[in-house]
Image (cartoon, rainbow, N blue to C red; front, side, top):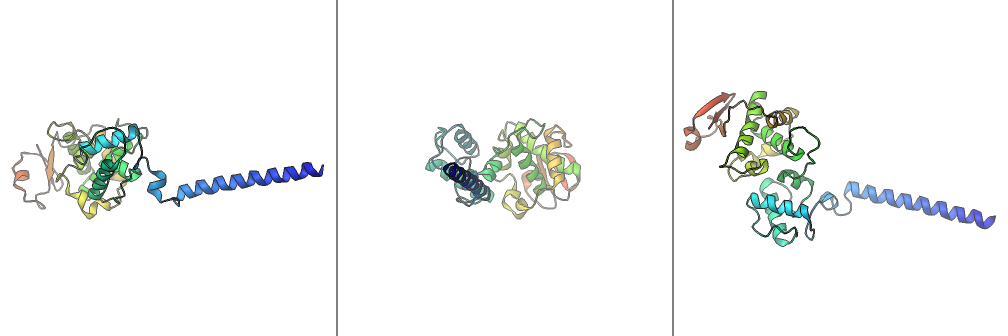
Length: 235
């Protein structure tokens, strides 16, 4: 009987120890103490392989950051392309395609959290641009900015993805200024959803500008189809 009790004590101790170790490991992962948030939650990084790496390579190629093979191997060229993209959009250039990087690439959402037919990442990215570009505008004016981006996606002269349009060189100055890092308002996220669901207050515009903030001759030469707030929307 004494042996049996000792065995039970050892078994209980081992079980408790295992539970504590497991909990500690989970907690460490949640707080990123094994190398930081990106390394714990990273989807793809140097040495990774698979279809997700292919999607990252394809997106980087579409955006002009990557010209290597779309082979699903996260090597030095893919890592360099990720770093270049991260630097351009204001993220830490660690070469790891973690949650924030995937979000900015338009690859971070599951697509199941909204009814627009676009990924959650697309909704969030569009809301981010609306918030940065149309802060202070009416709700209609915010939806209109989102509609212009979507009209460009559908237009043959522009990239065919939201992230491609947003990050096209010189297209939106907000991605390189302080507004880009301001919190995204709930109104802007809702405006993004309304634009994605088909509301286009501009009537098909593919350009817009604030005449008080730009002297660009090209923009001023475009035929204005709608004026909403401080923005002129053009084709």
